[in-house]
Length: 77
Ligand SMILES: [Zn+2]
Image (cartoon, rainbow, N blue to C red; front, top):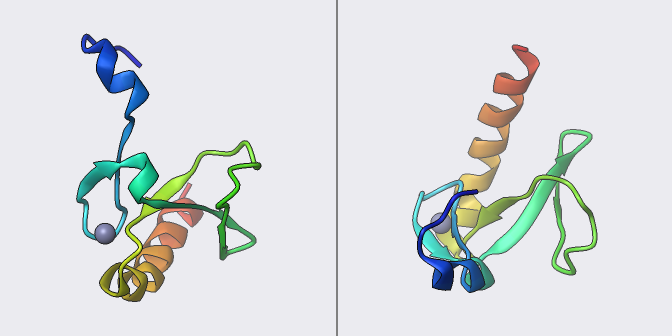
């Protein structure tokens, strides 16, 4: 990914899928979708495309809705 600011490389910014807030990757939980379920990969051992979520009650609550939208979107293709 092109990035003119080389310092940003050490501090990757990710977007929470629920609230769309941009946060330092370290401040977010990462997960992926497997068999229609959400799997948190806190050890970052699985090499698949990750999604990110704030560790907050609000975003956990919104995650189920997001997952349903995600699955609808991916079934359409
Ligand atoms: Zn969030």
